[in-house]
Length: 418
Image (cartoon, rainbow, N blue to C red; front, side, top):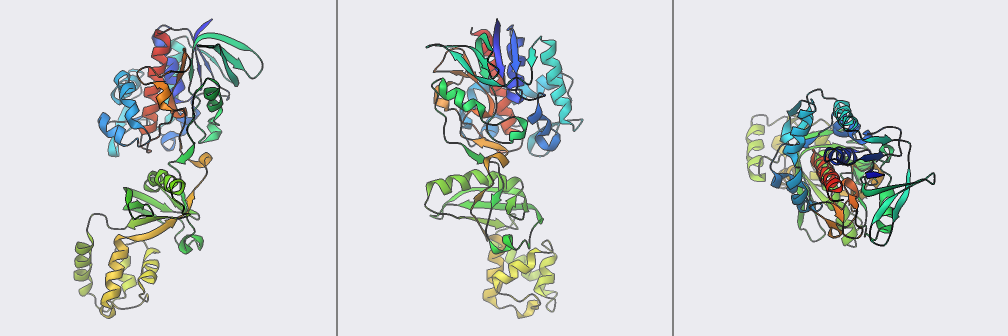
């Protein structure tokens, strides 16, 4: 009989298998796909952002979906431990902007291969092409795993690490939620997070800004009462359906929550093209610069500060003709233009589907999990790790940190608490 069965060959499952084997358990790793580590291999744009080299508090701040739950798993295995773990496996890491840690090779496969080598060295038994049908249980505890083909494999503990419903081509198709419910767990409502936003604004639908990439701008989300819910500064992309890029993705969960909470079908976002300056400083700076070129059109003056396709849209909304010389701008129009440079409204009406999201919001209710061990409070011997849990963070190494941490914690305790 196996001591521990780990279901799922993603970051949480691989780390759970390694931790359980390191702590003396006989481990069987099951995955329904043809190979392990598929989600790891495509993470970080194929470079694998393995974690983030900042403080625990900063990581938790970047996991707005129940990040505080992670204090306990982090006491067992945190971001510093993740860095040490991979470097001990021979994966050299480097730090990039905002603390993001990548392999020096810039190749996610180096991370996947190192993890696979480690679990093989530890004697983990691996079975791919092995879909799980459900759990074998009695009243008090899990007793094994039932395979889709009819076979039942007995064991002393099971770690479910099959991911959420996002990026389904990697194998995350939501299978684990039904097993959790069968074991007596609650699954909170699922929703897409870290997902592009959709909009029916005319400038989106006519594709006049499609493909326009902005750097160092700020995007702010407001609820229908005018309360600021979130703001993020960084890069953004206009698409044929709406907004994408890092800051749009970070705003997405707040858009989803507003649309669920309020009887509205659109959410107001504001784009700040110059977040480093307040509106008065921006107005004074541009006025002084433009006074030197009073005959030059406002469109051409704006082109010195903004991407080519942005000035026509801004001037149209400010009520200024494209070829108007600076000297002929009405004061009211000038004030409106400067306001739009700081508070350009973009209304969004939703997001792409959960399958198109980078991360799944919602999942197994955390009040039903022991945070120090990741064991179920409903069934002895049952553990959960990774995205199947009701934990979600921003992109930038935060979700994978949560997956590795909960995976290691679940694997360790599944091995030692039998």
